[in-house]
Length: 164
Image (cartoon, rainbow, N blue to C red):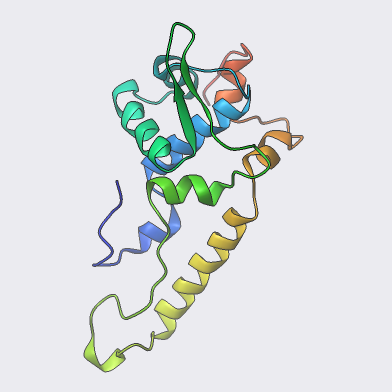
């Protein structure tokens, strides 16, 4: 599910992929009721992610050890790790890893292994984003006191969605 590293595009830095966002929605939703298995269809409805696509996302999360599938009549997906250990970066790296800029993305020979000021600053931004995501657990997201809850938590608790 990962994009090609080169050529490098600035939009890759500015927003993680839609797939990674879908994965984060699913993980936050599962974290809102830990230990309660949820089917792909239930997760899709609560997170507003297409179920066919979500199935592939959940498979990737399973391969990475983020979620586990439980079989049986009351089966479904659950988180494989405690909320206070599972970070945003863990989820993103399972789907679409952040990649640092190690050499000139344009392949300019005169740059060699040294980054120009633009790419050096972009790489610094990636490093800061990586640190923020590494330091933020799913448990912290769910524990934040805010009037604006994650979409999937609102739906999971029966609150109607209103769009602006």
